[in-house]
Amino acid sequence: MTPRSGKSPRLYDFIVVSNRLPVDSIEDGNGKQVWSRSPGGLVAALEPVMQNHDGAWVGWPGRADLEVEPFDSGGMRLVPVSLSASEVEDYYEGFSNATLWPLYHDVIAAPEFRRDWWDVYKNVNIRFAKRTAEVAERGAVVWVQDYQLQLVPKLLRELRPDLTIGFFNHIPFPSYGLFSQLPWRTQIVEGLLGADVVGFQRDADAGNFSQAVRRLKGFATKGHHIAVPLVDPSPGRRAHGASWDDADTRSVVAKKFPISIDSPYYRETAQRQDIQARARQIRADLGNPKTIMLGVDRLDYTKGIRHRLTAFGELLAEGRVTAEDVILVQVASPSRERVKSYMDLRDEVEVMVGRINGESSTLGHHAISYHHHSYPREEMVALYLAADVMLVTALRDGMNLVAKEYVASRFDNDGVLLLSEFAGASDELKRAVLVNPHDIDGMKDAMMAAIEMPQAERASRMRSMRKRVFEDDVEKWSSGFLHTLTARHPEGNA
Ligand code: GDG
Image 1 (cartoon, rainbow, N blue to C red):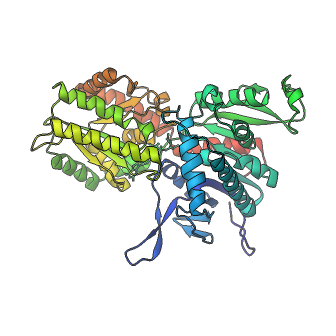
Image 2 (spheres, rainbow, N blue to C red):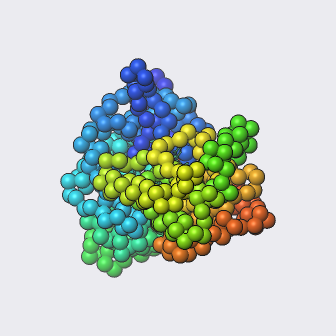
Image 3 (tube, protein in one colour):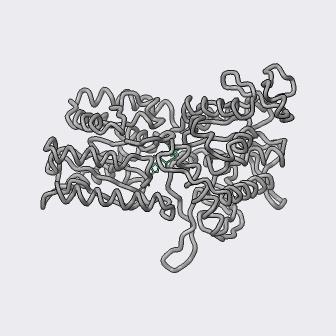
C-alpha cells in the first residue's frame, strides 16, 4: 500500500473512486479556501477504511469548476476530478439524482429520462475512469462506489485490463420491471459487469441485478457468479444463452455486502461524560418531556418523513399523545437543494410541521422541534442518547446508517428503534419495531408500542441489536468486500 514516489503522477496500488471526495471545499471567514470533512453515509463508512490503507481517493471536490492538484487531507491522498457547473447540473443533479435515484428507489418520485443528461453522465464517467487509470499502479485494486459511476468498471477495464476492479452500490438495485424503463439499461449493466465483484446491500438487490443481466444480456448466472463472455456474443447467439461451461468467460461475483458503521466510535463517544451531559441538557431544553422521539435524515423523499409526520400528527389530533408528554425532534439535513423534487419536499414537510405545531403545540411545549441544518457528529450522538424512540421510516433505503448509529450509541441498552422493513438495515436489526411506513395506522400503533414499551423489553431488544452492530461493523464490511475481490486475483494486494 505504499505510494510510489519520484515520478509524476504518483501511483497507488489501492484506490477508492466515488462521486465526492470525502472533503468539501469551503471558504473560511477571511475568504480563504479550506477543506472540511463532508457529511453523508459513504464518507462515514469509508473514512476509517482509507485511514487504515495508504491509498488514494479519486473524486469530485464538491464545487464546480475547481481545478486542484492532488493533496493530502485527514491522512488520505485525494485526487480531484473537476466538474463544470453544467456537468454538475446534468450528470449529478440530473442523471444521478433525478433519473437514477428515483428509479432505483422504486419510483417514489417520477424519474426523468433525458438524453442530454445521459450524454454528460457518460462523459463524466469516462473522465473518472481516465483519472483513475492515470494514478493506478500496475495490478492495483480499485474500488468504485455507487450509482453515479456505474459505467466506470467497464471503462476502466478497457483502459487498464491489469486492474482488479470492485463496485459497490449503496442504494437499492430495482426489480427488472422498473429497471427496464431505463432507456440506457443495457449500457448500465455492461458498465457494472466490467467489475470483478459487484456488491449490493441486500440479497434482493443482487438478485435483481442478476436478473437484469440474464434478461438483457442472456449471460448464464449460477449462485453469486455471472459468466461474462470475454467477447460479447452476437445477439443471435445470445438468444440461445451463453453456456456456463464456456471456457472463454470470466466470472463476475454479484452478492450482498451489507454496509455498516464505525460502531466503536459511537459507543466511545456516547460514553463520554460531556456527551452524556449534553444529552441531559437537550432533554431539559425540550422541557423534560416523558418521551423524545427522534428522526435524523437527509431531507429526501425516500426517507418517509411525511409519513412519519402524518402518523405523529394523527396521534396528537386523536389525543393518544400530547405535546406535553411527547416531542418529535426532526433533524432534516439539507440535501440536493437545486433538484426540483427536493425543493417541493422541503415545502411540504415544512407546511406539515407548521400545521401540526399550530394545532397541537402549547405555549410551553412544541409538538415538533424541526431543524433544517447539519450538526456535528458528536451532537448527533448526544441526540441519539437523548432519544427514547428513534424513527427510521424510509419508503426505500439501501441500508440506513442512522438506525445502526442509534443502536451503537445506546451503551445503556435503552431506547427503542422503530424501523422500516424497506430499509436494508431491517435484514439485520430484526428486533427493532418493524413497520410498513405506508400503513399509517400500523405506524401509529407501532409508535404507541414504542412509547409504552416496558424497560425489560427495551433492554432485551437493544442488547440483541447491539450484538449485531458490533459483530458486523464497517471494518468487517470493507475487509469482507476486499477479501472477496482480491481472492479473485491472487496478485491483488489490498
Ligand atoms: C446512502 C444510502 C446507505 C445525517 N444528517 C447529519 C449527519 N448525517 C449522517 C448520518 C449517517 C449519514 O449521514 C446518512 O446515512 P444513511 O445511511 O442514513 O443515508 P444516505 O445518506 O441516504 O446514504 C443509504 C448509505 O448510503 C451507506 O451505504 O445506508 O441507504 O441511501 O451517517 O449520521 N451527520 C452529521 N450531521 C447531520 O446533520 N454529522
